[in-house]
Length: 388
Image (cartoon, one colour):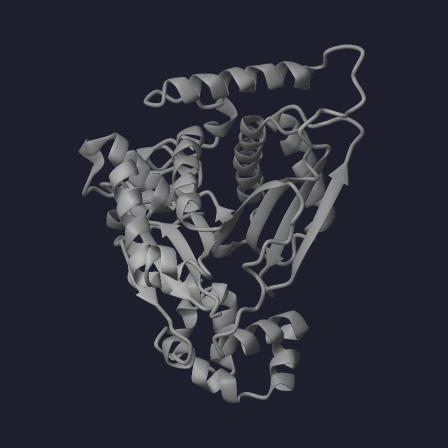
């Protein structure tokens, strides 16, 4: 049986949610994150803003200079998470297995669903129609026999795209994508390749692997050798199979700025804490995932005697893990945070006295209930807005 994978990637997700909730923003250059060019970092932007060169992880002051008429709005992470959960539930109605890769992207294993849902393209159209009718948003879906091809295909005809790479077409498809636009190749890697005279995937395929290894090291050379042949390098697989909750973010450009990584971890801490609360799970283990500019990927975790009870507690643990794992020399292309070995019962050693994190836990649970009840008016923790 032929494997069939979908990569479902929401189109300009944060900005699209804002435009859906605020129709006056539709068709305008919308920038999520930062306040009108002051201190802060762009979290996302609409396609109208992208035409000016604005992108995520860009300093909002630079975004303001590039797009003077841009509309700046604060991040509403709880609202985006609410819509994300709704979308993931739609995916789960169609796919036997859904691997959520980030708040706005998931891989769907559609192998064996053809008799029930029709051809892969017919199934993808059904999913796209459901997402549009139930959320008012558009999703681009890529189809491939491995997850890497599906990932590339999801970006091939954005926005609102649908593209399938069939078996035997992978080389032709890979060669049709400019080298610098291949997912996983950042600016520094492309510059390195360009300096060696390698400007196309076809050239890399003919380049000796040992020569690639001298330039990029084993991890980088293995990655390049694999992707130019349309094979999955393994970077889109679920590395934590036990009961877990995690989110990760792949940056448009490699990040070497500590404050940006810190802000990202703050957002991820709230995302995973709210997801854990919704499932009524408990966890004593938090893990951090880092993928560096040389494609090397590593994880580090910490396990405590007591369960994590608040996002602030998770954030502090995440910062400690980041300080241990990141040498601040190599830029980061992906960062992820999650809970591992979650349980349905809180088996942690009870505390004799209620500490500050228990109090924060009660506040966050109250916020979660409010946001679930009043979906049009979301409560956002002030700490998530301080960088705006």
